[in-house]
Amino acid sequence: MKTYNQNGMSTRLEKKQKRRKKGEDEAKEGEEEEEEEMMKKKKKKKKKKKKKKKKKKKKKKKRKTKE
Image 1 (spheres, helix red, strand yellow):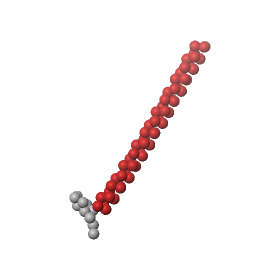
Image 2 (tube, one colour):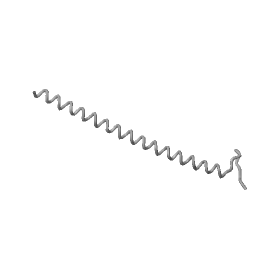
Image 3 (spheres, helix red, strand yellow):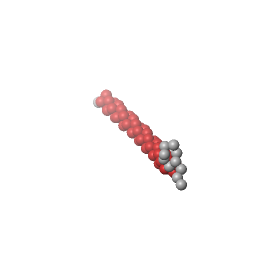
Image 4 (cartoon, helix red, strand yellow):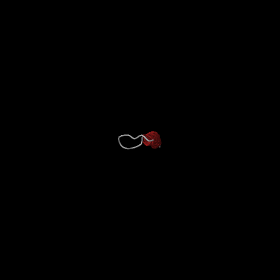
């Protein structure tokens, strides 16, 4: 014998859907965290590149003034 809630959906089905939805939410959270991590890494890399470029420019300028 099945038990039904107000929506006319069996309680077993409802529980199953809730579990499935919970799993999807957790997966989304994991993806968001990964994206955040990737963005942080990209920013760090960009910053490093900028710093390197600045250093090169400085060295070039020094060389020019020496000559």
